[in-house]
Amino acid sequence: MAEPRRQRARRYRFEEGPAALAVRVPEVLDSQYGMYVWPCAVVLAQYLWAHRRSLPGKRVLEIGAGVSLPGVVAAKCGAQVILSDSEELPQCLQRCRSSCLMNRLPHVPVLGLTWGRLSPELLSLAPIDIILGSDVFFDPKEPGRFIHTCNPETNPDCFISLNYTDFEDILTTVFFLLEKNPQAQFWTTYQVRSADWSVEALLYKWNLKSIHIPLHSFGADKEHLASSSLPGRHTIEMMIISLAQSEGTSVYSTLYCSTR
Image 1 (cartoon, rainbow, N blue to C red):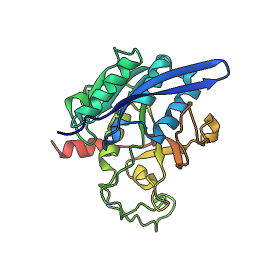
Image 2 (tube, rainbow, N blue to C red):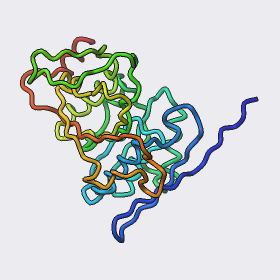
Image 3 (tube, helix red, strand yellow):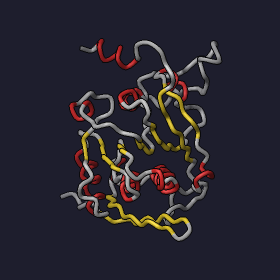
């Protein structure tokens, strides 16, 4: 008989002057990514805390939420939050629900959204203002092949050494959401695991643009955040992704029509 997995509640406390917010998330020591807090999630949650005054009333969707630390912080700061994770990972969806209950957020919806899949849940989503995603660019399908940072728009000789399917699923979903909500933004943090690749070339392909957010600008350039040991010495980056200006028929509309 397999030993029962140990669950613990980890506490995070965000502070700025006299203002403070404490949240707890349930973690299970498990090999699945969404069962515990990763360093990127703490950094993204810190960004939300630093911008908490802009969150009340904002419609927020967290994708790949897992234990949902950023989404929970956004909800506690007054945002209207929807949490989501893969419909194929019921344990991760249960972590989302458990985090809500642990933080007295029983009415926050939890949806199964699988990246790259045009599900009824994705198509029927209400309008959103902000998409959250921490460490969603973590698992290229062919880790031996990298994207070289270059911009085909300014460098016609740019060569991209990558099978474009590596991050296609997540970018398909993000692009669909941004095109459906043109004023929305995707706030995302990612861990730098190799200096040889970047998502910038794929963002160009998908008609997306990004703004790099320095960690020091929101107090996240530290090894310990929110009274925790995270992010530690991991190199974390943050960027805000949005639609680039375009004319004519959209890339996604073309792809969608071609599959019908």
